[in-house]
Image 1: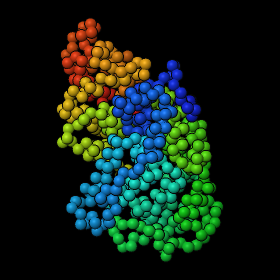
Image 2: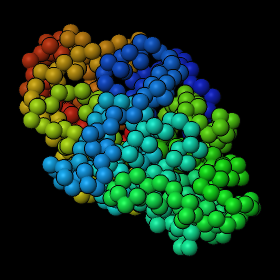
Image 3: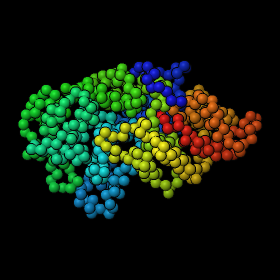
Image 4: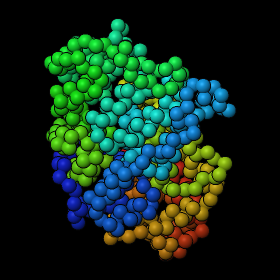
Length: 497
């Protein structure tokens, strides 16, 4: 069911539905799985009825732009003394911060999909700075800039307390410049490895970044600029000479390396949202949009998500779901209620961590590499168990919601309609289920017949499917869906988006 993404030759021109290439369930879920964390059934049926992919993309982008950051928790700006006198250990507040992020994943769309993306770009590790307040302040920056101006984002993240501590900027002083942040600014955050800078640029930049070290002797508090610790001398960066400071570095970087920044960032966006295989002509078009719009992120994503290229069949089923994708997307797409005794946000946090994706704590400064790194024999078993647990707890809590999920499930396109209680075509029912949960339509008859056999089970006489006795109102339909969902969770194609 997977495809070679290098065969995607469609351009960035807008996708407009046609009878030959209709707007359907697969395309809608493709957009929601990439640009958000899955869609609820009503989201899909509404999008089908509207039959306007451009309008749906505009809704997602506009909603992300207008979203305000998650309100400060009570401990969001605490210092070390506050935490020392707090009723809980620091680990409690750090865990609460991670649960906050998962809550946003389940309740929001593109803005927090981008928050996750940027957390793996402007990497920090909360294991290093060990402050729930720093963690929140970092998250607040990710949300605030998620779909704003990238140059402003680069400026603000570099002088944030968590980044200063993580990459030793808080130790960068005039007589002992520390090169860590200067190196990562170019190598990981804006240009890419060995792309348009040299060792002298790093050395000179580190001098221009000195001085952001003043803690005012407050543990885990704000870190501000101390002019006495600034390297007040001439520096030469990208051929530009002067007594440059922090803001000058950002200005020079974006003025002198405009094309390289745009290409590097658009390549990362493409790999994350479309395919791990880069298409140079598409990146060039995105980069030009980025530059034309003064490094605003929104126009680039609006162009990409509306494009024929994004909705080409070869863009489907080419990305392995991350642990967060796997768990949160399944939760959103089924929209099953869970028992009150299950702290599902904590479950998502812990299970994702065990499966290799601990939010706010990527494996190193280069972040999670994703894709095939998410899959190994041990991790695959854990991924199966993670989904099965959610399905089982949903079943134990309320069996009838499995039947209710089927009623009104869209079949494929707007003209095909939705499943009703009177639907008696079991093949059509299984086709609707697989259209909904798999990134690509199941074309292989052997695989489809296996899925059909699992759904039918052995509790319903075969002739009932032929004479109309069996419908979606038949007793035990909920059990049939439950069995099929457990089976689907272990199919390799279910691991793809």
